[in-house]
Image (tube, rainbow, N blue to C red):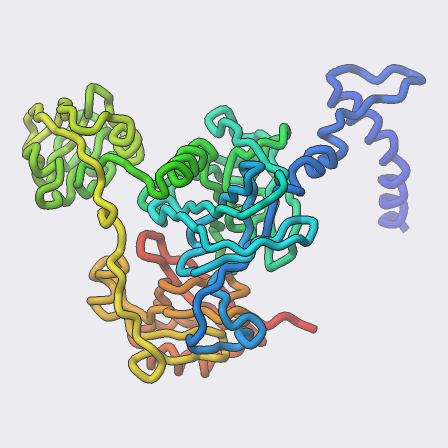
Length: 469
């Protein structure tokens, strides 16, 4: 009886609690006999959504036929990717992620109205995981404007729009959880972190502020299950806008480079090197004939300043390099073997192949690769040649996913070709043969747990489990 009374009391007091709460939100005490006015953005996002939704699209990326088939491919035999995007020009320019359209010969873009456009004009920048699609339109399309991601602060409210799991026109809300994140997935990164729900299929869709302006491009999630767990990542709009403009104007992105591998100087490394403070970046590799090599940089040098600008970490170094003029010598201040030294470096245009993986010869089924229908993938041994071509460290072992079925457990969990499976249900995977047996021994009803990783990403755990009917 006491428990029942408590519940009734809470329900009865709910109205009074709402009244007081709304008044406090207005920043004033409740006045007897007045009806509090609720700020529109606190009660509904409907006006923002009405503005944004018409410009958000779903994207079906297709490649040529003649490939192997997996469960689900019968309906979409040419599909290589699916995701979201948004129009940024009434002339039909669509922004999305590179990984949504990677490997595609053409894409089908569907508007909110159901109207579809087929395009073969796809321009990509894999180093930032961004792409644009040019549609052939006769009428002006609804479009979104880029906002300033630098103006966003932690705690600001945002909406994520896209097609999670193929459910087009889905809107979720949350806040900016952090800024300046890097997952080491791409060569150039500047992620906004949000708790707005982002799932497979949301990739490429917009993250908008309460003005309806795009402040991020939804790109990735950090998850143990492959689904949303409160941590979504969106490429900052300032980075996205700059890349989109270059792709639209030049068809490619031109950027300067120093040509060195680096690591951030943390407290432990600073102590090891005898530095007074943990700042700057340590050179771990110097590429032959690159600007850094020509300037005289060597392995283990610590770069403190470039062009007069102090560096705190690798991300800051990339930003400074990108802002320096090409062909003009600038000072680079370093510490070498405990002694300060100043060199002259001339930033050059970055070669298209710099930092990009060489196209590997992916094994086909029957020639080293195996179809694992139970989870909807094709996998092969991660050989040293494949690992090097894809950018994996020499120490990484496992089975390489070479293909994902259009449907199936792997696709539903957001797995992608190019990822490496290192463990199945806690057991180490050293070859594709070990993977096949481990998957066969596992149960998709109770769940098969995989430890996977990408070339520049930390290992994560994903569970593949059949949905209960």
